[in-house]
Amino acid sequence: MTPYDDIAVPGPTPLIDGFGRTVTYLRLSVTDRCDLRCVYCMAEHMTFLPKAEVLTLEELDRIATAFVRLGTKKLRLTGGEPLVRKGMMGLVTSLGRHLGTGALDELTLTTNGTRLAEFAERLADAGVRRINVSMDTLKPDLFRTLTRGGDLAKVQAGAAAAKAAGLSVKINAVALRDSNADEIPDLVRWCHGHGYDLTLIETMPMGEVDVDRTDEYLSLKDVRRELESFWTLEDLPLTTGGPARYVRVAETGGRVGFITPMSHNFCETCNRVRLTCTGTLHTCLGQEDATDLRAVLRAGASDDILVETIRTAIAGKPRGHDFEIARRQPAVARHMSTTGG
Ligand code: SAM
Ligand code: SF4
Image (cartoon, rainbow, N blue to C red; front, side, top):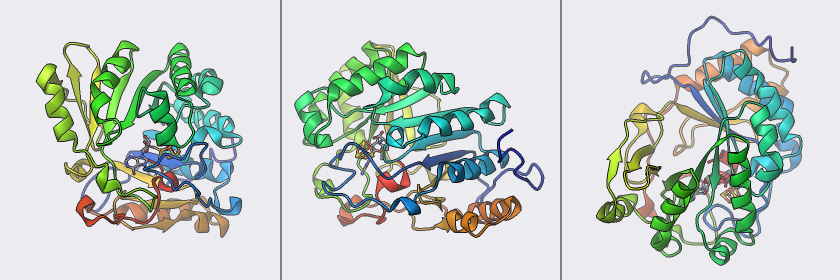
């Protein structure tokens, strides 16, 4: 029994928002820090948050557990880079208890992979079955440039270690017009050759970075059209309630996902909310709505009050987002690394 196994829940009512959508998926940013500085994500000289502002591991566990008790079925740990957070495996192992009870269906992570080789076995032991690893290119020099110093070999070794530990691996790649557009077919071949799925992501205007992202914006509609000119893409019914649409490439047998927040409206089926590493609950990635759960916890609130605060926040989940790349402005000021991608 951990300290938070007794979080009170007023009845088995699931979390339903004002538009009738049931929220079953929580993405939890466990840190704003990272060992890379991807050009589309962070400024080169980032100012990170004072440690006192970041939720402790116990606070993260308490909030996640409250969500699980409110019907959350899927938890994704992200960041910043989750595997650079000290004590991270303790949190993963602790949250893994909800898999054991059947309350939670899936515990997963999005990682840049630099430390994955070190942690893959322990993640598998904690009940993690699938993992997303971000890797935008197969070219070591370009990888170093895009991440401002990253070592591609380490990331690839991390993905291999995850596979060897029995995890399903999905590679995330941000589609960038001037950087990796021409190697997307190679990325598909490489991923499928290794038994990994590939998910392509359109750049999103999140937070000020040093580059002008509109110059790098590449519509995945165009990418899909190009892939279809030489492969057969079969639409898959698989839907995650998120912005991803999946196809199977008949020739490789592998899957490709397209995450198109800029060119496809997915809000009507949205089942997810996000918690920043400072304990702010955002019920929509593209809106400024926010509920400060850290303030609630640090004021010494009971579990009942925590649960009620979460319910109220979910009831106010906005209908949808309003990204518009042409504005050349971040749609929301917060960085993806704080919110959790
Ligand atoms: N550090 C981990 C990683 O890189 O996988 C987890 C956090 S990262 C913010 C999560 C995902 O968001 C990564 O796949 C990253 O490529 C993506 N991402 C970051 N900034 C983005 C942006 N402006 N537009 C689209 N995707 C972005
Ligand atoms: Fe770090 Fe992930 Fe952002 Fe890259 S995308 S800087 S790895 S948090």
